[in-house]
Image 1 (cartoon, rainbow, N blue to C red):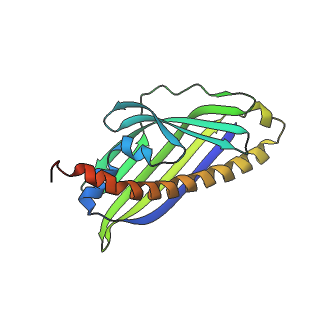
Image 2: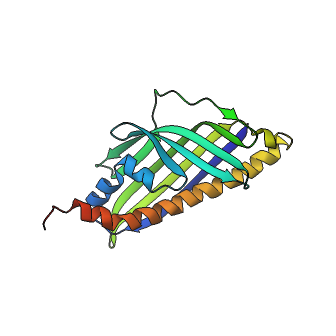
Length: 184
């Protein structure tokens, strides 16, 4: 098995009031679009989805992690929490010569507060998975594979975090324009 594990936390300022930021970040299918390496696979219902994390590592190994998620919004605590959705069938773990796929664990939380520039967002992200080792890596000692996998997965979580912030901030003006009533 390959153990993937990564976590990150960042704070960023978002140029809107807290209520608008809650609306913007409170739609899970929209938030997924801003996350690099993560694609929407299926929508089960409002704020319930299946997603796929997919990357090519070391120029040769395709890593796919599938997970089911739900988004919970708490307007009282100004928090948006994405956590595993229970009751869905996990995908079967499989590995080939140069790829692996399996079911994983993903959580994120955003805690919003008012600041001078609009909204301050404390964003946290965590990803974990135990995947079957591609056959091309079976000759390497497990400790070495897991050390490399841990480093790569932490780097990818940082990429997801930084890409999310940039993508969400960049897409906000178009989203705001779509919220305006037609003809105004």
